[in-house]
Image 1 (tube, helix red, strand yellow):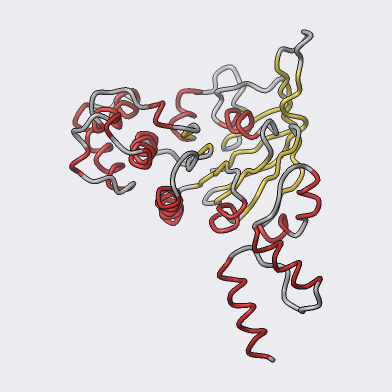
Image 2 (cartoon, rainbow, N blue to C red; image 1 turned 45 degrees about the horizontal axis):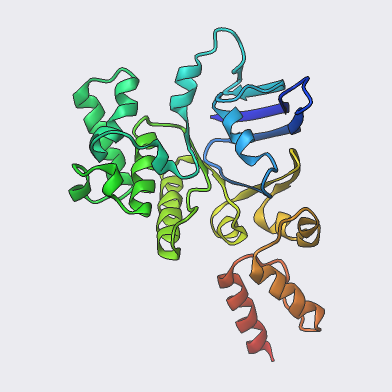
Length: 282
C-alpha cells in the first residue's frame, strides 16, 4: 500500500475575492505500515490535506496516487478507496447516529454490500479491537462517555477493514486518561499492521507514538522526518507557531547551561535515562 501526494494545491473560493490557498505544492509518500504524525498550527492545512487522501476533497491541481493509480482518473473506484483509507474526523462522536453502538459499527460494512450477518461479524471484531466492553454494544452511542464514543467511532471505520486509518485530533476534549487510552489503542492497531496517520496538536503525543512527522505551515509542507530530526529544529518550529516536546526544550536548556546532556531527546523516558547516565558518570 502507498499513498503519494504529487504537487498538490488546493484553493478555496478560487477566482473570488475570498480566494485562499489552503495547500501549496505539497508532495510526500506514505507506505505500508508507517505511523505518521501531521502537525501544524490552526489553519496550516492539516485537515484539508488528510481529506484529499481519501478523495473527500479534490485538489485544485496536482495528483493523489493510491497504489500506483491517480485517484482523479474518471474510472477510479472512489467508493472503494474510502473503504481502504478510513478517516475518523475530529470529534468523531458526531459521526455516530444509529440507535445502538453495534448497529452504528455495522453501518459501514452493510454499505459495502455485506450481509447483516457478515456486517455483525465485522462489527464485533472491530469493537473487540478497540476494547469497548460488550455491555455497551446494545446501548445508544449517545449514552457513552467521550472516550467510549471515540472508540465506537474508530470501530465503525475499522469494521470496513481499511488499509490506512487517518485520525484528525482523536484526543481533542478528552481528559488525560481518556487521551492515553485512545493513543495506546491506536498504537496497538499499528502494531497489528495498520498504517496510521495521526493529526495532532500535541508535540508530546507525536514524539511518543509516531515514527515520522510531517509539519504543515500556511499550506506548505515544511518538514518531513523522524521526530528527532524534526524536533531538532525546535527554534524554527517556534517561528511558525509550533514547539517541540517540553522535555526536548528542557534538555537543550540544560546543555546551554553547561551540562553536557544529549539534546536529541524527545520523550521523558529518554530524558530520564540520559540524566541517570550523566549522574552515574559523575
